Length: 221
Image (cartoon, rainbow, N blue to C red; front, side):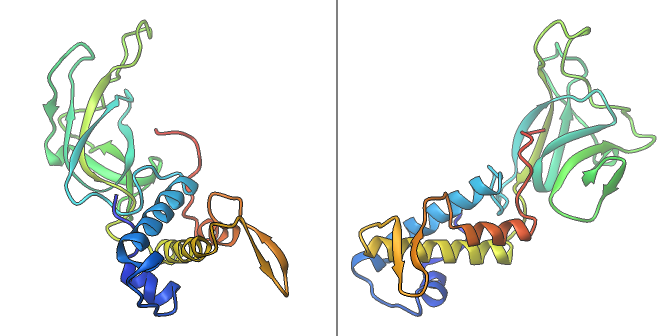
């Protein structure tokens, strides 16, 4: 997964223009801190696919909803939608691009213009009326995959500005703590002892929460 900032950005913004290329400030070491900060931000924001979408579309399968709409994971582009005609089928049938529309938000009040997409709906008067339900009536067996979607999975094409800033800030603090033998607490003459025992620092988490970048923990649709 691509980190949300580069070592050069971390040096310029988070480390005050520090240019040392030995010790803890090598590009390789800074990249480790950036990767760790990226993983922590993804975990706090409940986004397993991260904020930067894949550059290449890949296929994912879903249990069909049996409705005229289908929830999918967050993505920035969809190239192919395939649906089985029955839960017992082994082959998928590709739908024409004119049969479906991607949307974000609620299917009752869909947003067709904003990314990321998190759902598909059947176009009125399309060849198909619904996404085939992925279970046998009356639910006599576990749900099976009946919908396959090929898309670029993730939140956005590029990292949102606040996510980049949060990544740089957290990585810079970890680098500095690493220079201090990875202390869990830092002493301040003005503020006393500051404890950092969370997955990311509280003020950085607040930055992400206030930007509404934390996805509700309701599981994958």
